[in-house]
Length: 441
Image (tube, rainbow, N blue to C red; front, side):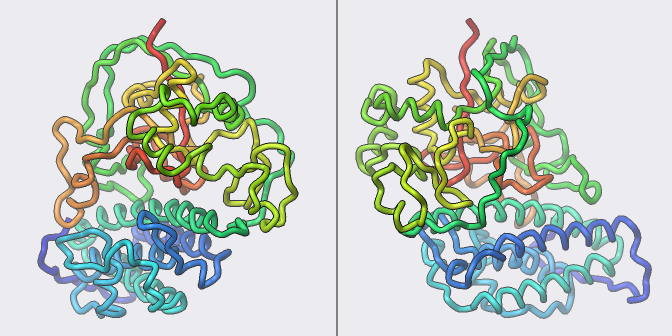
């Protein structure tokens, strides 16, 4: 990782042939950056500026911040003579990096009507061109220092790609018309082995001593697209002792959760953790965040026909509740209350990871992030990445809960069994659901 002082970039001749490894990095860089632009393609300029709550960010800000990362952490520090697109952007689009100076307040990001969307696009193009030149032309010593930061920056952008989707969905959920982010693609597709059909099956695990975590050096990328990348919070690999336990082979469905709702789950305090029950009463929770009751007046404004039961808002707008779909937009409190009602519990993150290699486990990835009962704490022997990236994960290791797996909005190639996502227990605007666990019989 870079030091706090700028380095000199030794520029090789322009006509130098780029080796295959660097070409692969450039292709990957362009692919990740293009995916971010594809995600905002369905959005208007007004859509991209709105901030619906302090925990969310405008889509335009996500585009600019991920660009800021490459400009501030890579180009400004490693490329001598680099000309910033706009010096003000170092202040406007820093997120939480104290070592890189002051920043615009997070809860006021939606007030940034300037720069506009078109200027943010120009900003991205400026930085993209400079990054490609830097990757292609830097000398071997600079490339060795740049590569791990580039890898981190790409995974960082993929994280923001998922946040961009979940944040705009929250904004649209606040619109009485409940607009669709993109047209529905629901079709009569053939069943998949990963679908949640039929009763959940309990898979027993013997427990014992298990190796947990990633064994790759944190933040170090040996080659473009190498599967051994890991964030520092996934390391070091270490051993844990697990008691015998059982996990459901699939996720809890909307149909199953609807029975909890119908049984008065949101009216019965004995199922709830104390803080969760306080939120139920204070915020009037009666169902998951994006469930819409049949008598809700927003249904008429959404141009959707009234239905007999619940409808669910998502990226395709408002659709009738799919009983077989994994339930999502749950807080930890709701997930834990359902598990208590069902005579089960939530798994620990270590149980989840140890079970993830079992061939009978379904819906581990690509559906919803799965709440665990594990506090987001450092692993034994944890050391943050060096330099500016030391602020990436470690300072958030308090008051948050680990989620495992990945969601339908997680970019391809970004999920792995050791991945540790984390949110506060009250968060419910993400694609978050649950899998049940039990102690061994």
